[in-house]
Image (cartoon, rainbow, N blue to C red; front, top):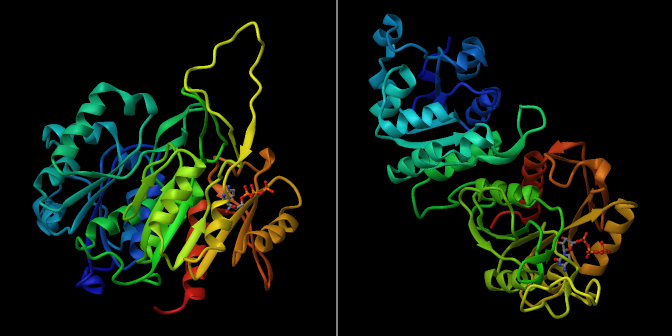
Length: 412
Ligand code: CTP
């Protein structure tokens, strides 16, 4: 088995794998970290070994999977103190309720918890648990304690749970999001974007829906989750860009290494976008509400004898078109086209009408499962033609798109 010699000088990550169904994603996480040149060692808790095998972990890390505190071979070879000290970053994924509780209380009764209390490196936790466990006061207390102790968190995300029919906040973040959070922590502060294909580039991304008030308690909204836009912002930051993400109301975590500006309405989004200019690249992934209510009521509209209120709608500003045709137009402007029919044809129309350089078109009809889902099938529409991409995860679409856009921008 390979030793550390082939990765000498590499940044060292100690991955602590907790015992939860999300542990299967840790295998992909190891692969993604190794692809980026990190030296990865992994500790498996006893429960984790019920979900992934030490053999798979060893094959992917290129080292034994560390499991036992009282294993003479392990202790002789790389003791728990060295495991903890040798790391530049300790990453806990999945961070189960049990691991968080142990760490918050300084317990040390197995190899994972002992390494966690023996390290002086930065610690990043990617929680994964049932939403009820995540919301429990004990977990809230433990997370607050750990944050106060300097532990960083990525996720959890919202979505379907392994338990049939359950959904909510508790899914482990996707491996690429965890990698981005790890890279942001490892990057020297104040030095974003020193390397990568977008190094030295200012990037602006809009994401999520907008909410247009009807009265103080009701809004016009749409089903956008913000996942695709947020994934693009994260990928652009990973590529070294200086990224500002302007997001409507979403229930997903902020991407790592990105400046996030939160807005509610289309008009607020336009103002925030204009405040974030100039930029080299603008990606307009937000599902902006086309209309707002002409005169939002100052007080809650009451049911009454007059019957349902008649809402008068007026058109919102088109943010993409305003920026693409404006004086401070980014060198590269990318729009999205959310369509339920004639996807490419409509996207071609939008390319011309809005003055964008590229439209990423996708089918958002209910049958496609794109809105709120994890995957996306897109068509890249430019003046030169149409390119159909296969069904990919939103993180993969983001990665591909960012490398394409970086290539189009060329060197700084
Ligand atoms: N967009 C925008 N501001 C708006 C509406 C849309 O910036 N007020 C942007 C979106 O972020 C996306 C692109 O324009 O990049 C296309 O959005 P889409 O909703 O598909 O198109 P619409 O302009 O709403 O056109 P249509 O109603 O014909 O679908």
